[in-house]
Image (tube, rainbow over all chains, first blue to last red; front, side, top):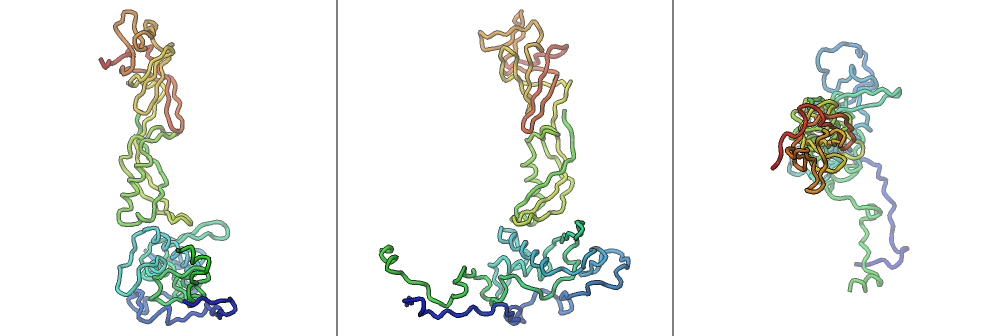
Length: 193
Length: 174
């Protein structure tokens, strides 16, 4: 393995613009999130409804929490990420997972599993918001309308789906992964003998 | 005296139990935490016969744990002033004797023992009547009336008397 003699000899590439979201990469067409049809996929709803004051009998329809919460019946991107993060932590600490193992989907990354559970609507959390005047309001998460293709967690952000189960390289190795690992120097070579 | 109380306790649960047997695990954990402890407010918790309600879990920020408010019934033992109870003598010295009834420590002072009892240090320390018919020594079962109680966070302590009618030695080990 060739070790570069001096630092100037190395061609350090500029870090790529990592904020570019390649949609085909992150949401490949063959990846089905478990919705029965395209219509069942949750979508954004208007912030305020005109018929907000209507009295509804029984349980409100899915994605309709307008009579229950005071602030907004839309789940914020931050709340979605928080839910996925909390669930991922539980999974990493050994919580039983709610999705079935399938062929072709890597089941090693807890954040990925948490995202899949979220997308298939298997989680049963209640969201608790603090209003600016200190009062609390809470809503079952599926009573809120869910951000459809909002920001993803950093794990699935700009990574190929087939590499999602791999542990990301740490530190600068993540950016300069194409460079060879440094070989033994004169000082460390004698140590190994 | 024993009481049946309905109490509420926050039980913290590790994420690895967030599965099908969550309530069973909660009950086991609650029983392990509560049974056999002394609380200054209620006394000694002897048993948890039933759990009434498992509350909704709240996720602890950062740790991944969840806390559940569990409403449970428990049988509580608490000595009262004026209560008569049977106990077993554990040690005898010249100022009185110590006895215990389950978790309760009881002390019976020299002044609260009838006058015809004398302390005898010669053959393993004991209280003996003048006609040597009744002896109070280690292992003797005694019926006492509680005069005063003190319940700490971890132990219960009582002062008791046997200087009354129908109190005194109930049975002897020998």
